[in-house]
Image 1 (spheres, rainbow, N blue to C red):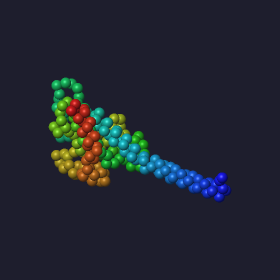
Image 2: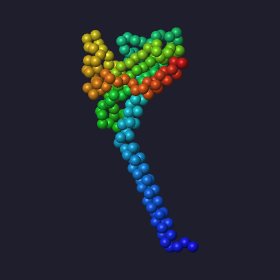
Image 3: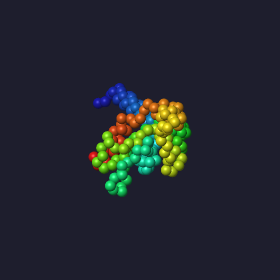
Image 4: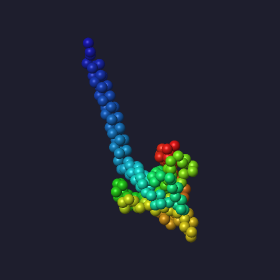
Length: 192
């Protein structure tokens, strides 16, 4: 037979376990709410900007982000080779926005390869350097930062980009993961 004392101990123990479970569930809910808060939006916005930037560069004629007269070799066919780009966003303006539609200007870096059939990456025509994208137009405007006959590259970067992005542009290009993704996409587009 169950005594009153053992029965009250069982209930007390059960209430303790219910309290522990509720506490753990509440703590988990707080963590999830904090992760989905304002800090998560810039990461999502950053991913949207990267996707838009990459798509814009890949769909643009290489002449729009061409450097120093480099162009794709004309193939025997009239089919235009794919342009495969890796991008890195240094920043955007206005900085306080949370929606892609509100972004006006993006400062970043691009490295694009013209994926002609069976042409390996190492000998492909490449277009690379800091880039400024005007997101207020459709399609976005592309302005490549490059030296002129009168202005050295580093000075041109400092002229065209805000100081905090210019410093990044002179030190950093693509991340390893972005470069690996670009090479994988390039090889697929070039039929390698």
